Every structure is written in C-alpha cells, then in structure tokens.
Amino acid sequence: MKKIAMFTMGTRGDVQPYIYFSKGLMKAGYDVTLGTHPCWRGLVESFGVHFEPVGTDIDIEEETSIIRGRSKNAVMSILKTMNFIMKIIEGSSKEVYEICKGKDLIIVTHSQMGAVEAGILGIPKVNVTLQTEMIGEKLRKQKFTEKIIGDFISKQAAKPTNKIRKLYGLKPVKSADEEMSDKLNLIPVSKFVLDRNPYWESKNVICGYWYDENEEYTPDDKLKSFIESGEKPIILALGAMSFETAADKARLDMFVNAFRKTGQRAVIQGFKKTLENYNLPDTMIAVGSIPHSWLFRHAKCVIHHCGFGTASAAMIYGVPSIPVPHVLDQLGFAMQLEKKNVATKHIKAKELSEQAIIEAIEELNSTYSVKKRNAEMLSEKISTEHGVETAVRLIEEKMEWN
Image (cartoon, rainbow, N blue to C red):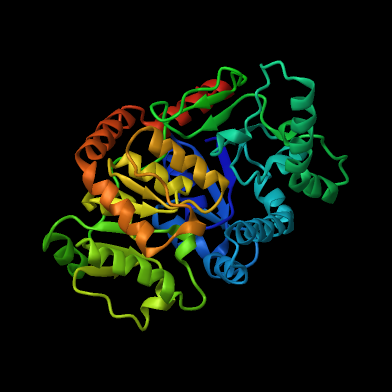
C-alpha cells in the first residue's frame, strides 16, 4: 500500500479541502496521513483520516482573532495573521521531516509545507494551488518590465521556502517554483468557473472542487425547527472574519438591523463573544460549525467573506451570494461569483455598513430568480466533475501507479 502525507496550516477553510481529498485517496486504497494544528485532531479524525499533530498546541482560530483584533486595518491584520502562521510552519519543519520519512508521495498543499522536506528525502511530490494568480505564465514571452516585476514577486514569494531551506543548510532559491513538483500541480476549482490559462505549463491541471458528494448531517431539533418554520433564511458566514476575542456588537448590529429592516430570516455563524450577551429576534438563530453541504442547501443566500471554502461551497450547493471580501484573494473569488452572475456586487470590507447590507439584499431580491437559476445550473455542472476522484486519477497517471 502506497503511503501519502500532506500538511496544512490555518483555519478550518485551510484544512477541510484536504480532509475530503484524504478520504478520496483512502477510498482508492492509499495510506494517508494529514498533518496540521493539534486543535484540528477531532475534526480530522471525525472523518476517519489518520491525523498527525504539527506545530504548537494552540486554538488557531482564537489566536488569529487576537491578531486581527489588534489592527483595525483588514489588510494589515491579514498580513500579520499570515506571518504568524508562516512562523508556525517554519518551526514545524522538523516534525514534518520526520512524518515524511517512509512515505511514497508528499502532496504539497497551498501552505507549501513538505516541499523542502520531500526534496531532501528524495520523495516524489505533487502540488496543490488554490489561488491561480500564484501560477506563473511560463509559456508566455514576457516584456522586460514584466520580467523585472515577476522576478521581484518570485523572490518575495520564495522567502518562506528559503527560511526552511536555511534550516537544512541549503542554498536559497530564486523562486518558489523551484521547489514545485515537475509532474503535477492540482487546481481544485471547477472548469465551469475558471478558464484554464493557455500560458500555464501542462502540469497545471484544473480538476474540479473537492467536497464529499455524500456527506450526511442531522441538525439538532432547534435548528431543524427554525429552518422548517418559515421562508429560507440568509446564512451569515464570515468565516475567520467573525471569530472574536472581544465583543464586536457594532458589526453584528449592522447585519441584524439590515435583516430586520428587509424582513429576512437569518442563520448566524461566528460572533460567539458578542452573542453571549446579545438577544437575537425570533427570526434569527445563532449556530456553530455546520457542514456547508447541509446548511447552504437550506439557504436563500449566503453572506460570506469569499474565502476559498465558502465561495466554492456556494457554487457547489447552488446558492446565491452576497460577498464581503477582506483581502485580495477573497476579492478574486468574489469576482468569480459576480462573473457567473450568482452573486450581488461585492461589499468592500472597509465600506461595510447597515445601509450597504440593505442595498445588497435589495439587489439580491430584485434579481433573485435569475441568480438562483444560474447557481443551480452551475451546481449541476460542477457535480459532473467529481473533483476528488479526478485528482486521485491524475496522481495515479502521473506517478504511474496501477
């Protein structure tokens, strides 16, 4: 039995896709290890995936919320969060190295963990890229100025890799591409959402979204009763942006008041600290972590931060969106939704207000039948791709495993 390992760091959205992928690989007969923060042990093992703790034993969502709380500037807070996670990744290299020993393949996730370690150990590797802007257009002849800019960006992107290479006495690389697989880079996005860039090398393959096509979930009686008691609700799911270490009443008030004034029922995720002393109206309910596969199917629409996980889930499960992106990659995913006409015009995080939310809901209501139909049609197309199975098959083909 071939042994495969992959490693990822970050919030749940950085872990969940690899759980689904791990399950698909296991179903195909592979021995899979998923390494990540110790706090995600319960989540990973609940899916029957072999877990290995990597990094310090912290609540990553709480720690990152503390960092975000220290800065009112969304971009700066995200950059500080990324630096925090990168330090954990750097400090975890020795653990990653030990776990990699004896494996037949290392899948290098978007966290880039395991790339250097696999190289040292002589283990084949396959990459995963979520943000396609990070893929170089190697087949396009660049102008001189473009090359200068590209070289600068490549040098900056290689810094985290070079910090790990330094731990092993290796010379720095000029570009992170030098540590990438020369066989395969999986892009778990739908071809019905993203056109393949003709300037990409052939190893960069769009394979379809990774999700559990048969995921089962039974809601508790309170949520079940709420869902069945009226019209479909709006889901407020701001992901890591709604984790707090202190009450954020002003921001929650924006949404609650907007929902009330537009007559919307709502299911609210996150805002745990604020909700401790907050009385929601009967038309709204607060919930914890619930699979998108169940929750989104019961939604009128989803208001979300447009992280990779929620943006893809909205399309997978055929529900319109109101995007509230905070940083550049989230803006990119928001633009994908808008291009497919399954979302309202996005609200910039710095421009978030009660009135902006009301206007977005009014836009959604006035165009709902079109956006809902588009979302359902897109969902049907995505379901034909079987992203996890396709990715497994691609690995078998490239590794020549029969």
